[in-house]
Image (tube, rainbow, N blue to C red; front, side):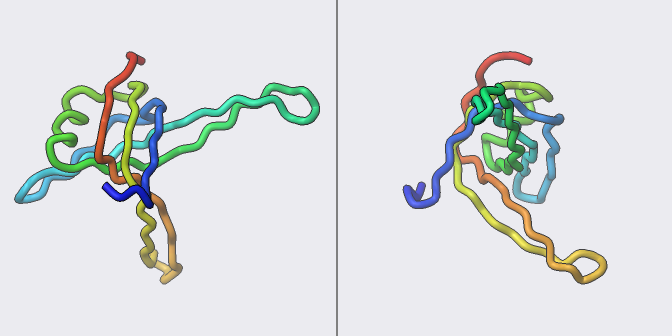
Length: 109
């Protein structure tokens, strides 16, 4: 794993794990919500949630498929990958994925 592109996240899954099967294996995809709490300048408590697209392959995909359901708290380590594609109208779209290299199953729903 590269130390130059590394991310650690702890959060809850936002949907059921989606499995994409190939001839030589499978890929697991799921969204992960991470939430920060802070107090703003006016003294109000603020909750801010960020959503991350996780992509998992190999044996970790098997673990995700078997043990991770919507709302499961997990910790992941991986790397950030930026991708682009052209939509039906020819507009370039951008999205970000986290390619998971380590997975820890934490609490329940």
